[in-house]
Image (cartoon, rainbow, N blue to C red; front, top):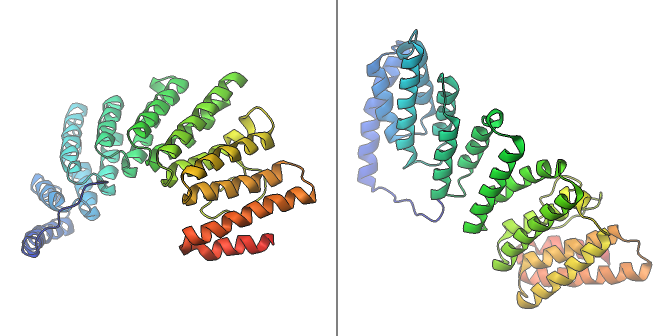
Length: 340
């Protein structure tokens, strides 16, 4: 988990574990080659998976045991009970292996296979998991899957709003949560699509407020800056800004903010200039100012003197970034030289 140091076993303990695992693996291979889908085979897979939950071929064999052996021709209530027990087993393994893709994959299979999956309970469980590690991207991806199964039981707008509230809660706990920012970027366009003009403005203003609150709290954390860039959007011109991760030509804010875009960008520039006075070595603040100046050049009709003025500002920013962010000095030099 994030912020938790994994305790490395001693060489002796690791050797003993591997020897013990090797015995079980030999048994498993024999059973698999003989297509023995028995309770004994099932118990061997349990022992191996407790030791190594990333042994994906064991999970495959375990599913075959359930499909072709233990659950074959079983009545619905027995299948429901057996797969419910399987979910409990997975919960127990999750506690020590919360980022194992194969555990999530098997849980997905169990729920799709069982006659009556409880998706609301599953949502509760995955959200409890994210309380332990709010940045577990496997957990966030699995949560999206579970939410997709609740579409028919909840109004779409209510489903979106609860999701937005959940991500806000996670960001309030820790702004440095890429998964939460990413999820908001997926939700916001859907919320805006059915909103009236006033509601759209309120939502966008609120998003800018959340992003800026995170930025001012920790100017060195890039997650909120990247979300801010996405929110602001850009004109349909490719701009080579270092660190730029926006792949689409615009964002929701570009088409939903009421007012003159050039005025909005100019106001943003003044605001981040003030932040730079307090955080003079913030490379993200400097990169954002460079991004905004480039945007302003495209958003506003400029005469030659204004273009020169903005280019001078960008060159000055590049000079500062070359000293502050030396690992990317060549990139800044390239941008600077293209403007001279």
